[in-house]
Amino acid sequence: MKVEDVICPFCGCLCDDLVVEVEGERVIGVENGCTLAQEKFMGDHRLGHPIRRTGKEWTPVSYDEAIETAARVLLEADRPLLYGWSGTQGEAQSVGVHLAELLGAVIDNTSTVCHGPSIMAIQEVGHPGCTLGQVKNRADLLIYWGCNPIDAHPRHMSRYTTYADGFFLKDAFRDRKVIVVDIRETESSNIADEFIRIDPGGDYEVLSALRAIVRGKGALVPASVSGVSREQLFRVADLCKAARFGAIFFGLGLTMSPGKQKNIRNAIELTEELNRHTKFTISPMRGHWNVYGSNEVFTWISGYPYAVDFARGIAFYNPGETTAVDILKRGECDACLVVASDPGAHFPRDCCAHLASIPTIQIDPHVNATTHLSHLQIPVAVTGIDAEGTAYRMDGVPIRTRSLFPSRYPTDTEILERIYAIVAREKGP
Ligand code: SF4
Image 1 (cartoon, rainbow, N blue to C red):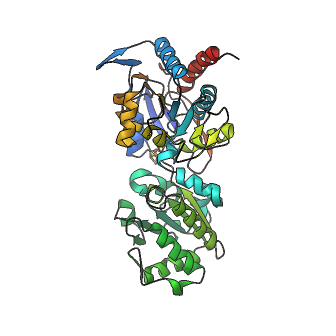
Image 2 (cartoon, rainbow, N blue to C red):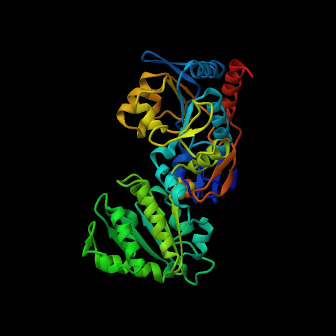
């Protein structure tokens, strides 16, 4: 059976035009998807049942036992941490925030190691953004700064920018110009009309120089700024001012290099500066398919987008103190529930060592690096494949993902609701 208009639950593009061929409980073909989508839909490495580690041995346990154990571990902890959330549906994220509040726990999502600085900058100066549909139909100048869409978001350019048709562009492919800013050549820089190669850590200076030029203070700019010549900076500023609609997309090369949220603030202020001359927008390239959703859902319920600490009985937010990496680094939490992410593959070594030393429970369909740090793993259905659920695209548009066949696994939401019920019963009214 072929299912049309399937949403891809892999990256923040949430492409909605896939055609997926299903046979029984398996996907046997994917059309329109990139190689990442093929692997997501066709990969066959699901954990079959919950497993618990005793010493070096893993033993299978029932879902009932696994859920009861997870609830007990969280109830007995003084400072539980609930981490992850970007690879699951909004419904599960919502139960997670309520569970954290009930436990007096810290809840954090993967923004903490990706676009957390972008959110902090947006909190300071706002966000002149727009939907991907606006970019596709209007943008004649694209700037990719500190990101490599061809590798990380393979269909971003074909669906929304460089290779896409645009309603308000006569010949989009010819009319659009692409600028890539990075510290090294990438697949994306190779197809750019202008590649700005900057010295590592030089983003803030280059953004400041561009702002000065756009503002008419170009005389202050020296012959070279962080490896970029004055001539190139003036050429790029002219390209930006001449555009009818420009769109900046930025990635972890900007958020996680020295300067962090100040880089993003500077980039937003450059965008505002350019809006004195033409129309310009700026947007983060969100990685996990529903990381934007985790920021949305956390904010609806707690008022804060990530790193929310309920230990005081109210929501408290202070990135650098209440972020998962900081709490683990200080050895502060005494139990961790990891949902739909893989901190074992991305966190610093001492954070991973602490995760391995405390009761860590993982809710995830697949065996991954975090499995090796965990004491219990509960497999679940995959949202967008054998479970439906709500996700937010990288531009904040909510999209309902579909279930392609009946699942033999419970969903993350069902598991979390059962854990919540046990914790609520124990905690009392
Ligand atoms: S670009 Fe992202 S959302 Fe689109 S098919 Fe590839 S992995 Fe899936």
